[in-house]
Structures are given as structure tokens and as C-alpha cells.
Image 1 (cartoon, rainbow, N blue to C red):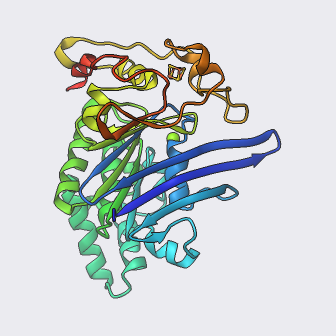
Image 2: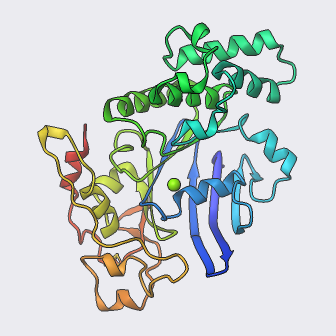
Length: 334
Ligand code: SF4
Ligand code: MG
């Protein structure tokens, strides 16, 4: 049994304009020490997927199952869920200012979290833990900086503080939603390195959500590509990068700016993501797909194994190897 097993997750939101079908049939597994990258444009359902697991989507209609160590996160009681959040499953968001309280000192916030989950911890112990965690994530003079407020930290330092907070209770799983999107490239690389190192040290499972396939090029063991609320392609990192089958995955790869070899390539995918209220018929990607065929407009392709790799599945009518080997993926190595 994997640490987290999500099966056929479906999430929709009733609105006055119609039902928003945000997630339609997503399945994946994550184990300790492993990283799953969930990739897609905004509106692909990647954030809604993990927010639903954390029960942060009030008003949503949800079906499927999400077993965390055998307990279904989708039906767990509120109390059990509160105990799990932070202690067993940590979260890191794109904008730490929205998660760090502006009126409390950074160290104090980590202390409060430690004490909320570990009632046996004294104030002194919690303080010690907070300073230790701030030091671990590379905040200089952590004992002094612990007494500063979030606005006194730079963007990169705030993100480090968020990581410290997420790791303070040694959770089994961390969900990071666009953790480096707001940061410049150098700081982004440092934060990703840090996350990779700490993940190894703590043997944490990591779900990394991003719109940038480049971010997880060196990090993810497995990749789930989402489009219009559906999985487009899922597989080990090597299959997703080097043997990609779905034209959307190929499009994402080509839209990644890469500094490798001094080359920069940036070919955005033309068109817009679909309306989740009025989904296109057939393959949801067909209005934007350069490979579109007649049947794509009427028949929705199921997720099916690609070639001889049972762990690699794709929802596209094209034959295996139709896109060739993804040599372009080399350009992603940074
Ligand atoms: Fe493109 Fe057709 Fe494949 Fe959809 S099924 S991704 S439209 S080729
Ligand atoms: Mg998002």
C-alpha cells in the first residue's frame, strides 16, 4: 500500500452559470521519499485536486477516494482531519504572505504550530524547534530572525520560513503548490535544491504542483500532466520527458524557457484552456491540438498504456511513438 492512493477523484462546483467540472477522474499514488509532479496550466485542476485532499474546497461535490495510510481523506471527520493537517501532511503555497500571519513574528508562528499539534511541548521546546528549523532551511542568524515579522523577510526567505513551518512536525507528505513561481530564477533554484535535500533527509513524500515542467525536470520521480480537469498523461519522469505521448505534454515541454546550452526556447501553446462549464466534445484538448484528427472531435480518448510500459498512460488517440522520442527534453536539463 502506498502512503497516498488517490482513485478516480472527481470534483465539481455548482455555480449560477452551471456546474464547474474542475476535476474528472484523477488517480495517482505517492510513497515516502518519492516526488510526484503535477503539471498543467492554470485551470487544469491541479490545485483543486490537492486542495480537495486537504478538504479546503468547501461547497464542492466530491467523489472517489484518497487513502492516506488507509484512511480516506475525503470522508475523515473534521477533527481527525485537523489533526492530520500540518502534523502528517504539510503544505507550502506560492505566496507565503497569504499563509504567514503578518502580525505575528515568524518564529512564534512555527512555535504555535508545534504546540497546537504536540501538547506535551513546552514553550521553550517549541521555540528551540522553531529556531532549529529556520536554521535548517538556511535562514542566517535564525535565533534573531525568529523574532522578525514576515514583511521583514525577503520573498525567498519567506518561502524558506514556509518550508520550515511545513517540516516542523516532520510530516509524511508535503504538498507544494507552485512553491517557487513568485521567485526569481536564482532563488527558485536555491529553494528547489533545499526542498530536494530536506526531502531526502526526512524521507518525506512530496507532491509538487507547477505549471512549469522545467521545475520538476530534476526532481519528480513520477509526473502527472493535467488538462481541463483530466489526466492527459502520467508516467515515470523518463517516460514523461523522453517518450511523451500526449501532444499537450509535448506542448508544455516546448513552452519551457531553458537556459541549457545558452539556448532559449519558448513556444507557448496557442489558444486558451477550456471552459470547465462548457467542455469541448471529444478530446478536451482538440481545439488546441496540432495533431487533431476527425475522431478527436467526437470521441473522448480513455487513459491507456503507452507502448510496453504499464506505468505510462496517456489519453490520446495517436499511435504509440507518434511524437517520436522527446529529444527536445534534453534542453530542459539545467
Ligand atoms: Fe490531439 Fe486527438 Fe490526441 Fe486529443 S486525442 S490530444 S486532439 S491527437
Ligand atoms: Mg493553482
